[in-house]
Image 1 (cartoon, protein in one colour):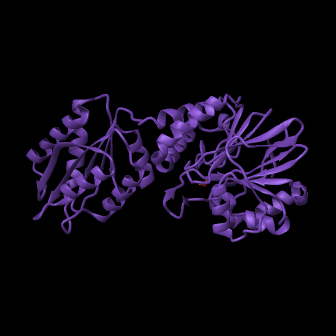
Image 2: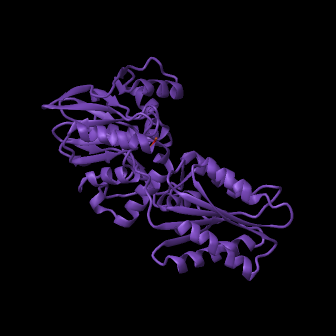
Image 3: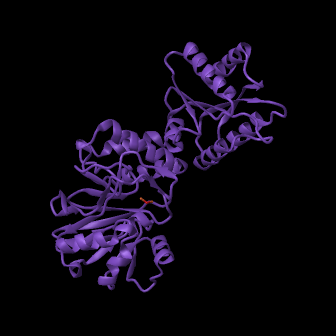
Length: 395
Ligand code: FEO
């Protein structure tokens, strides 16, 4: 089960091809995932992170086949979320005195979740280091709010490996472990989905943290995250991508997201797509029915877009509930520097567009003035009106 990463560093994690959702059911998994834990065997033996609780026995048994657990000198917990710390309590039953290196917030998180204040915590902060023998040491870098208050990264000198935990990861299953072995389209699709859906609200912190890491001038040969592929081929490419994504990222794309009761709003959505294509053939246009499409995949498309158009019919003086849930998620992510427009059909009261506009405003979008509100089913004239929105979004 132990697989070499470099020299005396091995991967001891778990690849999960069956996983379909994550964070409860809030994040969709399309191509498997992994929880990556690592074992360093220098003069000191160090375990970096564990795996998810449902597999705690499998993890401990596998580890025990590789080493005497009592030989672990200390454990580094880069992050306390259950997918990385879940197997810790079961492991600690066998080695209860083993020091656990983590941030001060890491202690709060681990004690809060597992109720073992007696564990031998060693609190570290940015710049602290531990000698692990053979001329190597581990240096800790706090990664506060990337994406939890307790998150940190650990750097192994001489081997030049950055154990970055969630940062630079992807929910992506890859038996071959390394980025150069991956299907590049899938790898980058999943890396972007991960950033868009989890890290977007923290983009200002990502920018600052990358500047801080670059300023440390550490040679980096490998970035070993806690999910998905390990970056050994040009590892800084993912750092560069994060720097780009954190800087109000957008492509020449407009995404149309709608829900519909009797297909009227659907017709408006597709009419808008045609108008945008006519007006700006270079612009990518994508259309999604929110009730029929995975919300995380749509969110990745929003992340790539310079503008979005959102449509819902009026129902109960408001909008359809699937759209309401999606807009709530959109507000959590707080995208910047993107335009938005609204449209929708109504029978009598017609509040839908106003509700959509308020929610999009709250989510940080710049609303264009143009909108289309269509009474009952769209006529040819109504469909033609979508040109006004197309012009405003393409401007
Ligand atoms: Fe992969 Fe924040 O846990």
